Image 1: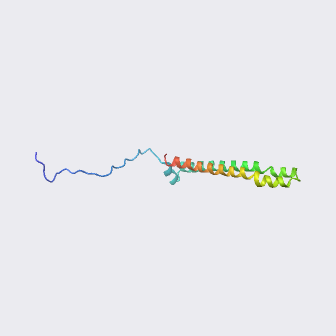
Image 2: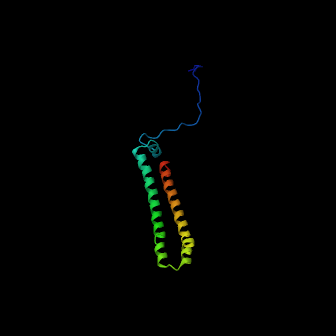
Image 3: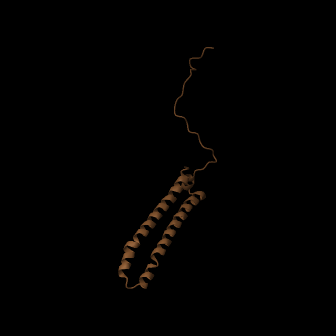
Length: 119
């Protein structure tokens, strides 16, 4: 069978096409962008975890600084102790508390990003 010259074979090359995912698959990022109920739940979960970290840091700060006026009132003659506690004794715990809070907030955000980006 001779082939018709108009019917010649052609090789098509190019990058492979991407296949679409199943229609039942959803992306959390889409849910957040479209402001659906599920997206609202994701954002609200992040806000709750950030609020929990902030309230925890505030409670520790209150327990750390709150009793100091009572301590200073109990010892009125110890002016050097007051400056020592306020200047040196309180500085390191406040820095550690601030560092804990920042690391916790970043971890909360990283967890949400990991969830949204499907990693």
